[in-house]
Image (cartoon, rainbow, N blue to C red; front, side, top):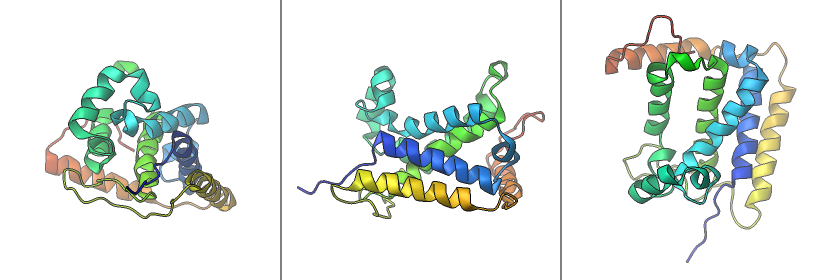
Length: 202
């Protein structure tokens, strides 16, 4: 029986922070460019752990077993929660169904969504991959992390991403905001979802 290494919780946390630093330096959205790190860091860390709620032995799985066990039995590990549709449901939930009374800042929400996506990307670096287009069974992977040294590889990739972000010029930016806004508007029209006029997705 072949053993395929899985990304560890430490690896996911490191990769999510590295992704956050990159998003900040690239100024992907105004919130990432000017956001409060005290909001963004907890948000990205929570997002990075959430997909593994489908595993009862994970950090969040142990804390919320009443949620983790049913998901694990229905979908298994690296099933629904490791898919694009799960991320889209979260995105819509954060901006459509989240109670306004909670007053969660936009930079925290965007960091949370980034952390979730970073988890999926990181899991793609292992041989078992993720069912990104679930419920289709196809698994997407770029198996960079293999063998017994996978944990060392996780750290190396996270450090490399962080170094690349730090070395980017301060005034370097990529105008992703307009493109993302167009995508959201397209989905809004297609799915006939009404976002409150005082709520901006990006």
